[in-house]
Length: 259
Length: 232
Image 1 (cartoon, rainbow over the protein chains, first blue to last red):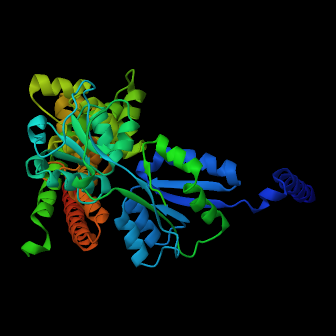
Image 2: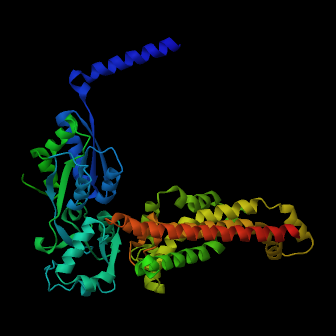
Image 3: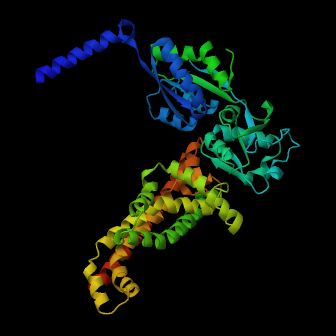
């Protein structure tokens, strides 16, 4: 029985290798840590990259801050895509970024959304009175001190002179998708999220886009992780900057940074 | 000493105590009733009640929080009714944080009390009844003293869970300083903020102290109760 078991596992192993074929013997798995706002785009990247190169991709999605802290603690990430440059800077300062791999990959816009589908478009500028629009209701945002979408949103409201009046009415979620859900459910009439989040949710309508000058540029840097360089990670870094990935990102509403 | 925690962090400590206290106050009588019904009565829907009580223990806290948002938000059936008819709002207020804490802690209360009720020998209650005591009097003078250790255990667990609840709270009522930003939400915020580790550590240290104090108090209570019940 025992011999039989060994023989059959050798048989199935060699059969498996034969089926995989010689070119796929070197297939590797790349682990990508990506910001939560990339959820929909990364699903497309995953299948596209596997079809193009034969390598597998494992995507771990969370807030950029949580991912960066995990990488600092030695998490096995090969590639990191952050939703803001700050956390990438922190990794770079710790010497955790592979030399010469960092690029600004994507850009995004910040929008004001409403639950009411019939809501008229609002001119976003110093004349807007967001506090009056809110009344006793809440403005849904990501954490304004910690999560990039919240930090950008606070900066935008500050530069428009709205922050002081609005601050007591802000409900902060621990990621931008949480704020999106509050507006989609109508619990908060207004919210501030990325343009890409608003595009992914039918139950909210975009009533204004914050002018680019009101907040620091929203950039998504990508980089390989030091000590984890290899064929598959660099293939993924190339793929992310190629035409196929560009189309996938643009379908989700991202601006793709020209190199 | 004032600089040890910022005013917002002291506010989080006070809020946590308030949220946990109210969650415990409401869970106690309700949990006692449900535990008694589950332990002693056979009625249609008993298994369903048992499952519903345990759901917050089984489901991810974020799911519990989302379901609370659907039901008790101002757009939800229960929350909408309470908001428009009774003028009582859960959404984005400390009351909602207390509701989330109470719901998440409820299975702990029910389990602890139920186990202690099931351990009571029914013959003691029957003996009291044959001596002419009414059912309510039997419960108050025989059952209640015997299950007091279970009630204390359930109360401490509920209070502790109420102090530490995170996932359901942030999903249901978000993070609003002074309204819903309890200690765990404040710690989460500090950990997500670059350079916030030291302040997070101080807040975590304080919550460990508070938890240890609550536990010591409950042990002391339990010993006193055991001495009184056993000494009779």
